[in-house]
Image (cartoon, rainbow, N blue to C red):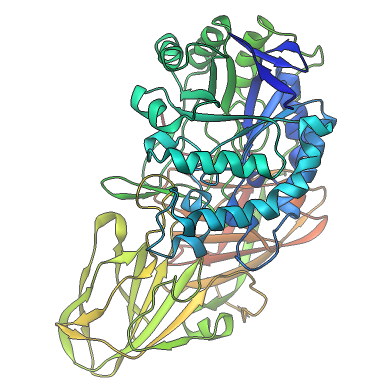
Length: 586
């Protein structure tokens, strides 16, 4: 029996009236040593619940391997910490989560099969989902409310009405949860649109809506769809996410607080999206693709109530005041901002060029035609393709079907151009000698997380021709960059060649504290501190700094590694005490 039930117009928790005042915080976007801090701040803002998605692609990176439930993915620990803080949990395991997350959370090994009809009753898809739930749910059942745990409700799918209308598929998911022991309240969520609600809801389950404004109209639409039961906004959007090359989105705190007040005054329950956004560490960011491909930046700050580094922002204070009008808020004071590292300059004095040392990072696969990243078994990162140009002189390189997602082209080690999926690039003019080496370094910029293009292939997507003649005999290096232990760094002077290269430097820390990595003069690449992959940087912006969580630093000497894909005007980086997420638009 579910601990959380519904009445004609609200929720009952263990038989007593209860209103969900929740905030979204994705454990996989926050360093695990900071979970307790963020959960405490959620309670102090007045929240009684937190919400999180569950990323299938990280928990089951290998269909035949064990479920990953440690470190950043220790969901049981996160649930224990929420329970210890006195917070309930809304669990959103998908299987699809969107979340501006790589491939919407669907595993790369699954979406690589072009014949599978994703998010439908296709047995190939539902069988994979069932195997995943067989592994995921048993360790989570002790954390369900009926077992004395914090999880009071579980979401079925995610905004499904915007994607499909396969009711049998949704019913399969409902039964998949029930037959595996989930007794808690199940719910669906869809945008407050009559067609979406009709296609994405399931009879017998609570329907909830997602929106960020026009509160009265959207609640009325939800009530038209569902004449009885609680009104709940399962995603109350208080900010937005950013794409590379676009602005940094913000929303006025007073405007968001006014709409939150309207929601609560109407008697509705709410999940604030996001209470704390966090970071797309490593290669985890997603992308959108409507008219053009648009990858999401590394920061998932989302202009949330808690900033990316966990400091209370303007919305934190405004929301706390609003919540206090409708519910009891703890009397404890608002937490102070976290300590920050003193300004630190890092000199990167050692380097290793990528192209000549690619073989030390990954053995090449020899192929007649270039293999896609899927064919290389590469789920994220880069692929380097190498072949020989037999013809001399000028001509056109043509990449059939384009590239996924961004390709740098080199002839005899010299850069000759860049092709980008977002510009629909396929052709590049080059000049070469006979026997010249052609190298193509392709970056996976993030899997599409929404709509029909989830699972779009990465790498080189078809044959490559030079002046119409197909190029054959390729060495294909899958560069996942999971470990940099074999990178052969050597001392370098202040001048650096315009070529992809790893750069290494050290810096000293007295007391670890949060910081932000600024890279003025650098162009595009990846950053690691003490082996922890901070994510992608790009001077295209809007994001100008990368968040450095205090727990990844250590007293004494620390290591910084950058993979710079183009060139830098210097060999230094800076650790600062202030985030720079770019020019704002609201």
